[in-house]
Length: 372
Image (tube, rainbow, N blue to C red):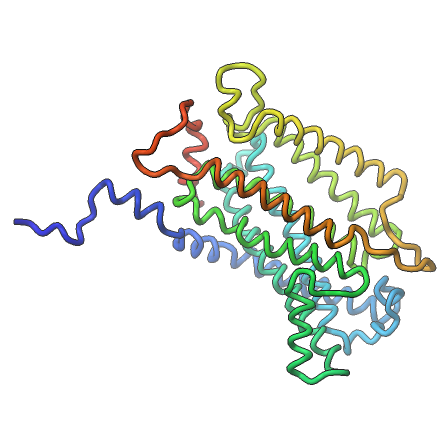
């Protein structure tokens, strides 16, 4: 009699496939991200050099805010923190654009197929997470150095860790809100970004639904930058440019919402399938209205020049919103994510499924996207 132990039956293969994290895919994307990450490091060094030179010659907005920073060599870790922050923002900008182009109307250029956009989106996402961590790490090291003027090394390290990596730990000035927002962006980027490699376990529909929440990470990152970056602290052309650069993102998002690439995500006000979409029709309409209003608001900010910046001679503004507002927003966001997970979670074999048409073939094919 043939032994059956250790054999894999056809019915068990899908179970094993769904149970594992896609380590092979992650390793492939990490290898693919090496050129991308290398370029990011080169850009970071160039930004650091620019910030260093401007600090030394006194033209930096940071020096106007904090005159002691003119000695750039003494505060080199602070400038590395700034450099990694700006390169992280630049890479976050790029990965969002790739993602919106991939999931919206497809470009007609033959040299930019969907598979290539998909690969660029994944690799730049991994690079962005790494840059965000390095931004926080150099803030951590700079805080240790500043703390050692008053405390022992152990206490300095602990206080710096709380300020740099514990959401809500930073307790003074604008950083009470700005650093909280930045840390939430970093910590949300990790699970939402890596959810792709759990798609065999969660199912493609849940992964696609969760991935839509990644735009919140970008919004928090831009908010953190405008609220706390000493380079964009004051009113002026640079801060206005940062605001203006958000308009292409908002326009691409609106185009993606109006004409998504996946048929199952299109707004259907008529027909039998209008109730079978992953999100209710009302939510899709609301999303279009909100993004359209955001574009109008961004244009108004650029035209009026009222963008929340400070005048050099004016006192610092009271941080807003209060931290409890941020925590409440995080609670609502978490509830929305939990609702999506519960609604789209894979069902056990043999359990009843809701009646309705299957997901479109394009959605089902997402799991096997070409990795060229």
